[in-house]
Structure formats: C-alpha cells, structure tokens
Image (cartoon, rainbow, N blue to C red; front, side, top):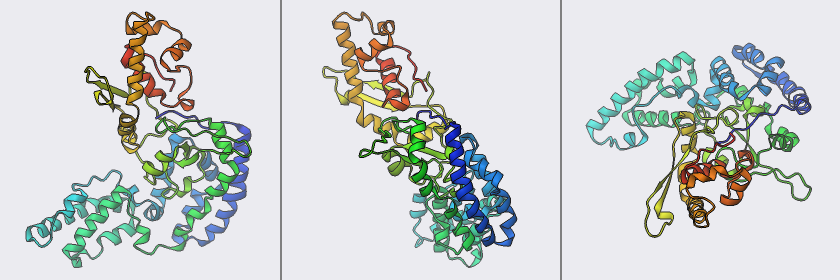
Length: 399
C-alpha cells in the first residue's frame, strides 16, 4: 500500500466548507434535531454542532478512529443501526461458523454443546454490550432466552458470528426509531461528489490505486474524455454515515480493490493509506526461485511479508500475495533475464554493479524508474523489490 497526502489547498478547503457545511449539513441538521427522541436530542445537538461539524469534515485521517468512538460511544443506538460489529471489535469468539453448522441437533450431545456454548458466549458478551449500553443488541440476542429452543440458540450463535464479521444488519431484524433511519440522509455524498469529485482527485494527484499499486486510476478532465477514479470511503458510509463527506475518509481507488475486495468492510484496525504505508527501506515482496534448465513461471513463487499487523490485514483483504503471484511472475523473470544479458554484453561484471549507474540509466537498462513516485507508477514496490532481489541492491521506494 502506498502513502497519499491529504489536501491542504486553502481555496479548495474554503469552498468545501461553504458548500458542504454551510449550505448542506447545517440546514439539514437544524431540521433533523426536531425529529430526534428527547432522550438523545441534547447529545445529537452537541455532537453535531457547527464547531463539531467543521472538525468532523476536516479532521485528519489519524483522528477518524477517535471520531467514530466519540459518536458511537455517546449514541450507541447509531452504531447498533449502522455498524453493530463496532461493539465486537475487541470481543473474541471461541467458535467458527463451521463449528456451529457441524453440530447436528438430532444428537443429544450436540444439543448440550450448543447450550453450553450459548451461555458461555452470552455471559462474556453481555459484559461488553452492557458497558456500551447496546440495548437493542441485548434485547435481540438475549431477552427471554429461558424460552429459547436449542435450535434458536444455534441460530443466535450464528447471528453473533455474522455480526462480528460485519455481515449482519440488525436494522433488518428489529424496528428502530425513524430518527435513526433518517440520520444517514443528512450527509449527502452524491451532491458533494458531483460538486467536488474532480477537484479532490486532481489535488491528490494519484494515478495508481493506493491499495494495490497496480490498477491505473487517472483523472482526465478534458471534455469528451472525462474520467476519474471512484472515491472509496475508507470507513464505509453505510456503516459510518457521519464520515460520508469527511475529506480524509475519501480514498481514490481502483474498482477491484474497492468493489470486489473491500466492499463495506468496517476497516477498523486496518491500515489507512493517508497515514500508513509499506516501509520504503524494507522489502514487502519476497521471491523463491527454483532453478532448472528452463526458468519459467513454475520456477518462481512470490510472497508478501510485513511485520505491521494493520498492513498485513490489508494485504490479506486486497489479496495482494495471490494477485501478484499469479499476475507478475513474468516481470520478475524478464528482469532476471535482463541481468544475465547485461553480464553477457559486459555492462556489469557482477549483479551489484547496477548501483554504479545513475537512476536514469537503470530505468533504461532494467525498466525500473526509481525517481517516479509510487502514486504515479504502477508496481513500484514490486519492481524495486525485484530489482533488489535479482541484483543484490538496496534501493528504496519513495513512500
């Protein structure tokens, strides 16, 4: 994953504030406050005052987790409606989906296992839900469980698993107040995107998806050929609607990473490209070579390794190891053959001689542009790691 920088242009930020906050959010909240239940009205008014809306809209990416905690801890029913898995982030389940599905209730011992697991899970989970005052979840999962059949307990355990995984919508199971359902309509991403989408992608200047550093995502503003990348909500607007128009939550990204892999995952605990990136001086890609007379695709294995847990989670989510191993082995082999050619024609005596050449010549000799930034250059980290592996060099990326 490559690092991107937040927008700092004062004129743009002033226009954004006027349009998004003054003309959209403030008038909508003024009407919305009157629809909120009295129990929560004061909290909602305080959380989304003009001062807090400005802070919410322009906060840095490193502050987004604190913003989420502040809002969802003060108004837990918002989290229950939009992102029930928020309460499960630090709650570890001692079973998997397959564990539960494999328990055939026609066998008495399996019924006993379900009952034991249900009450163990309930006792542990209730401590967390009560601490957060997640009353809707408590009512849905555990109210009157003395009347619940073993089959129903099995289903509850599966529901808990789905909530933890972020694939369960509590809002589809129980009735919530109208003010909760209507909350997301205040933050009008579509209107903002229509007005500022091209400005945002232009200012960020990213031509390659920051999640995979592979898919091209250029911004072209020429009439008749206009195109720009989608703005992914790092923390998805379906789960965190109050971040729908927050600038530091908008990440230009490729279709595959955004729509096929990331989807609506909550991303809590994952690496954010605005403040996390693969280290420039450490290898991410590793290569295992099995030499034979014919050096082909089957002779190379590409793997990914990082000691940063958040980055590791990203690598798994975006299928980086699998994608690069299946797609770019040939690039590694081409560079390997180029090394042998350079030795044959006498341009280098040993592989490490490559470091004697200026960067411009390295670009011509092996096809790696060490000067071009990763946000403009597909496969930059992969190419640099390949170069270092094959030639024994220690070049760094610019991230």
